Length: 320
Ligand SMILES: Nc1ncnc2c1ncn2[C@@H]1O[C@H](COP(=O)(O)OP(=O)(O)OP(=O)(O)O)[C@@H](O)[C@H]1O
Ligand SMILES: [Mg+2]
Image (cartoon, rainbow, N blue to C red; front, side, top):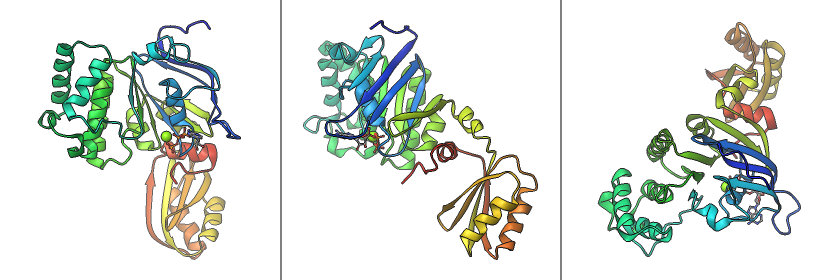
């Protein structure tokens, strides 16, 4: 195969995975190009094929068909060479529990062919930078979830990879640790690090990613900046209603009586209404509620999110 243009750091062509014995494609003919310096997000629900895609790009999963290059290296033909250009933070904790925090970094460098002295200096530098210096001699058992995740990120960039892959980097972290990790990823990206991350948190994709591919059933359904994806729905307002009463009757009234209403769906204790370009919106919503005999407990108006985009594309919610 002809190697792709050098400005694209990740390129896939019809990249496909069917696991042994499966009667469906986990990843289905994926064509992707990610440029140098991007933070790119793969967003999708459980089972969409995000980890499988990242796995093929990082040489852990062998594609069934198609091609993939990272930093111009064909990952199937030259996996060992490709690994030199990859940093990986996987979905589970892969720290070596026999080693201390510092040793987890140091030996990673040695494994990647760094000299002892360089590896020592880099380990010290990264522990400092990721605010783990105090924990250098500690067992990784002593680290909190947020600290362990920071250590995995430090380890992943140790050998200065061309692309950093993170699979669900903030799953299971508390909100504070999540924000701290977002900050780290933004800083790395500001220094030029190309990042591909997978997530099923729409906020994560919105806050971090310059471009997002929305995936489901192994396919990309839409790919653009978060702003453009949201604009593409044509929806400009989301009204959330917490109500007591007949929700079916209310849903029907809202669709009939609120100008611009495109979609209504059940949420916890109420309904969510999507509206494109309606006028006198709140007055019409209240009137529709009154007409259906429902009593409104709470009403909120927000802008569309990537969740709205996903619902629009699939009719499903992103979260379980
Ligand atoms: N090793 C495997 N063997 C067989 N099937 C697999 C394997 N790994 C994943 N699958 C299946 O492939 C599909 C895609 O899985 P994948 O893990 O890539 O999804 P994901 O988007 O990462 O989901 P999650 O959000 O749950 O991490 C799923 O239906 C999954 O059950
Ligand atoms: Mg996954």
